[in-house]
Length: 298
Image 1 (cartoon, rainbow, N blue to C red):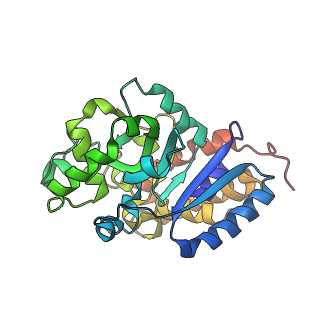
Image 2: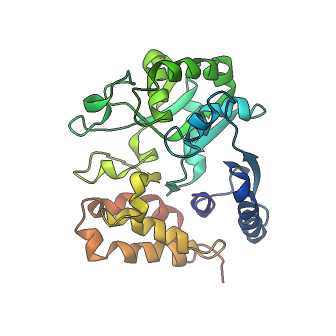
C-alpha cells in the first residue's frame, strides 16, 4: 500500500506517512522506508507509533474485528497534533495520485467530519440491508477501508466519547467490528458524513457479479478485502497486487509497472473473470500518468 502511494505520487505536495503498528514491526518499516526515501531523494517523511487503545477492554478493542483494525477509532486522540488524515486499510492500493483524494477534503461542508464510501451499490447483494442486526447509515451502509478524517472536527464532536457507549450497547450485535460501530454512529449523525463515490474504494463486490461502479474517471483506490489480492477468484485483483509488489521504487513506471500490468491483464484467466472485464478502469489513471519516454530513468 505504501509503495503504491509512492508509485503514483506526483510530488505536488509534501507526503507524510503515519504508521501505527506493533513494536516488533517498527524496525522493518524503518529499514524499508529509509531505503525508499534515499532512492526518492527525501520525497516523504514518516512517523511510527505504537498501538494505543483505551485500557478498559483493551484486548477486546485490539481484536475487535481483525487485529489492530479498531485503531482507527482512536486516531483523533492518538494524533492530537494533526488536523486531518486519510486512513487506509493495509489491503488498499492506489491507482492514482493521493493528491486527488486529498483534494476531496475541500468538498466537506462546515458540519462534516468524516468521508466514507457506501458498502454496496446494489441492494440485491447488500450485506447491511439484508443481515445487519443494528442501525447503519443510509440504505446500504458504509465501508471504512478508506476513511477521510478531519481529526480537529472529530475531537470537537467528542468522537471517542460517542463511540464508547455505542460499543457498550451494540457489542453483541455487530459482525464487522469497528466498521459496524462507525455505521451506527453515522446512522444517528448522518449530517456529519461526506459520502464519496465507489472509485475511491473499489472492491471485488463492484465487479464480481456485474459491474455496479461506474468509475467514469477510472478506479482510484482498489481495496482487495476478504483476501482478494491473494485469491484466484478474481485474478484482476491479484495481478494488480503482483505488479505493484514487483515494481522497484525509482524505476521507470511506464516500463516496469504499466506495461507489465497490461500484459498480466491479457491473461485468459483475467479476461474470463467478471472483474477482468473492467480492467480499463484499473488502467485509466496509470495510462494518463505514465507515458513512454516521459520519465528520464535509466
